[in-house]
Image: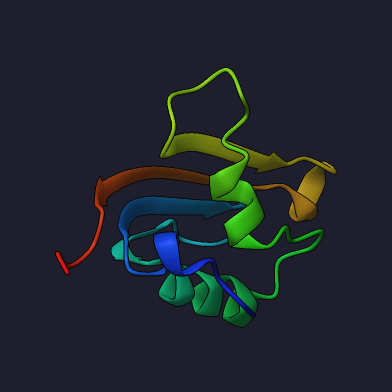
Length: 89
């Protein structure tokens, strides 16, 4: 996955909730979030760069919620908040 360098080093506090699984809470960079989503193999997954860049237009930049709702076992959500822009250059 190619991630925009401007957001690759930013840190996000996030939580993934999926039916039948224990919630996962972490603070990581976007590539680490992507790796977690790939490992979980959730249905209908959206690339995290798209999720975070398009933070549902009605929310503040860097904060948001993505819900994949097909009902039953396929429902899951991702909530994130940007906590750091990354290292100063």
